[in-house]
Length: 298
Image (cartoon, rainbow, N blue to C red; front, top):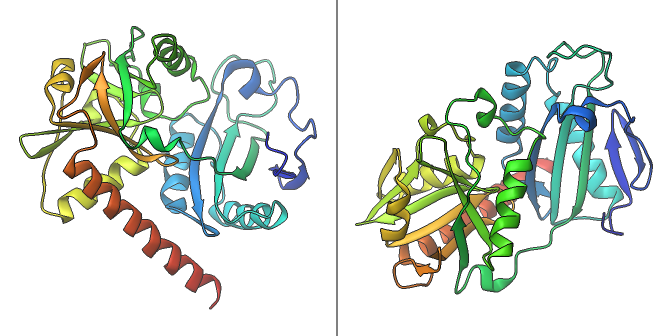
């Protein structure tokens, strides 16, 4: 953890970042029995926090993880963490586990879930990841096309870590996972978009993917800008034939993919649609930040 992070939030308390606050019998540690959200803070304002909390609570309900989190508690805790850690532009992670193991190997309602929030300085990707762009492979590990867990941001991230390591071993920046039906699912921590013949295409939720917060925002921006948008099943060969390819998440925003499997995508540089959508996204961030700062002072 960065030395700039001096405090973390654990179950209602602000503790030293070095404190051993999670028990050895926590089910998040033992079984990956929990959920998390990551998001950005811009000039002191968390971006799309309400949407992240809503997704977390929907997943908590599906996994019988108590009542989820209290939005008011989360907002207060984040504001205090930013103050204590002297942060304006930050990375946030909210983690919710089932709490201490009581001997039941099932999704039993927790007596006391464990809620932790970490705020640390945001360290952006190297500029080269945006221009000329990133590289990717098709991962060998597959994502389940049928498991209900694929739609939730759970603590079990081993498949994603395997795929990312596989990419790095091959000299690439990231990996794109297919599902067990051979359809394009998502990248290791991002949703996938391609541009083909002027249409913006992204795997539909029927592919059994995480409903990304940034994915939804980019789709809304694209439709507002008048682009043709298609959410559908995507074949892996379409990635290689695309005019543009990019991935989205809340921390890195929009990241262009200039090559996949060693083959250039389009012209091998960020395309006009990708760049235009990223500008629109940053405009949306700025408007949201100004609105949040105004609300905080009234």
